[in-house]
Length: 626
Image (cartoon, rainbow, N blue to C red; front, side, top):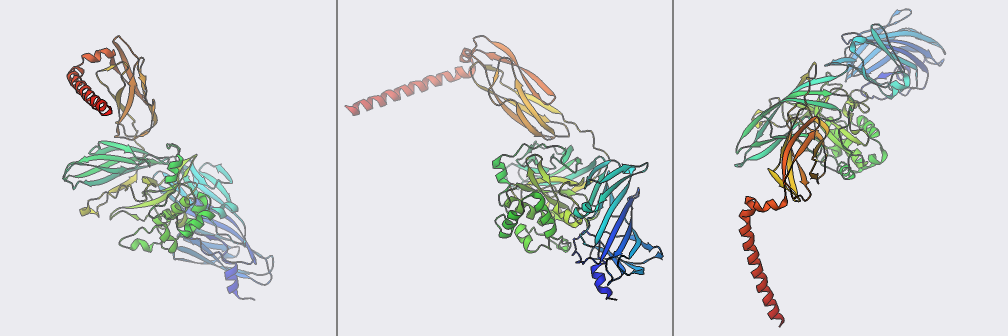
């Protein structure tokens, strides 16, 4: 018989359930392996995997007496194997983040057409995990092998996990049973991507963020902090800010910016508390469509996003879509856990990342995606925030903001129909090809989004007292429910005591959100029976965050009128409305107002002096001509 060593290379490495994309064995088709795999998840998340395997010898020259299965990143227990003659010897080794199961057959598979039916089973606590109110199932994709014949997988999930929130890919079949819900997937689906499923209706986090501001000047100044913003993936409930800000605005990138006025040499500690409801896909589109000028801003080179690099330009010409760029970045770069042991983790940028692709963390995955996308004229920017993970081998965090707080970074690209779309090539790489392009998950919380600058603004966690860098300033935990949000608009109209016909006048509408959640895409309108609103009306307020205190200007005027009249200005926003009476006086009455009477002598003097100056100048001009 030929050496078993060749078979071990050619036939034993049939299937890789891998998180690491290892080298695929170059089999020559001497054997075929068919699989029927069942994943049975218990109520506590433990997953029992049963594989019924048929091994067929396709030649008369080789035989099989061993089988090897590699399961990347996932640790397994309770490994058993058996054929019709009894139990088979198994060995399990976990090394370099890969589990290897070696099975020794009781009988050799000798002869063309010879078949061996046998089974392999094991358990894992890492395939199903509960994060807050969401159960997540993560089955990594198969590595391609020409020796693989048929392959089907069935997942049995307890019904108490709740309804399917999302599934990638879509199951071939699904059915509900009394205690379980079952899903089947095909070989082609498993070769393209792993199985990623979430069960449950919502994910809610509670957060407490601490900030420190200091004014070292001898004069007062305004300082700002960033708060978690509303976007297409999350809804913010901001219940408390201590102390309250003067205003909360929305910058050009959609970030929430709280403003504080600091006295000379003042130090200020700020606490923001609230909740965030997170969605795995865009559940709304709160963004107005980007103009061409705005799109151009998001394809410009920036520090860390070197779009003029030769390698990056070549890849941009080759990779035409965001998905192709995502697939390249998630496979070209490799995550470096050794990098996390460094005392200071420096951000390398895209150009440096391509030089050392195996020394990457989330910043490099993010920067390289953005750089290639921008070079391909696809608007892209960075998101920094908090990402919950139960297994940092599969879903690592590595963005260190000073000491004490570790966050995560991921990119997003612009789509004219969907707005900003978030993806995570880091987790796509470390989780063995699970799909973090077509959906994210329920565990990414945006703190800031930036693309006009690659370094500003800074997220929560970066506003620290330099004498207390080791003190954590970001506290995020799961919450059972999202407290009932309130969106309460308080309106005030600031007008003069009276206006005069035919004289344009400006009035100010003051708008305050005293509720706990943002008011999205509402119109601010001003109306009157007798007055004309000459400035744009109504005004669209895209996002009015909690604690916002905003002023809007309206220009008004009326036609000529010789009689004094009364009217009402009506200001409306969302479901709130106020009315303010206003007196309209005929224009000639302005001559009897105190300001006019006080200025009348001044006007006469100025007219007199102007007339004398003109006469003198005119006489000199006439003499010069004669």
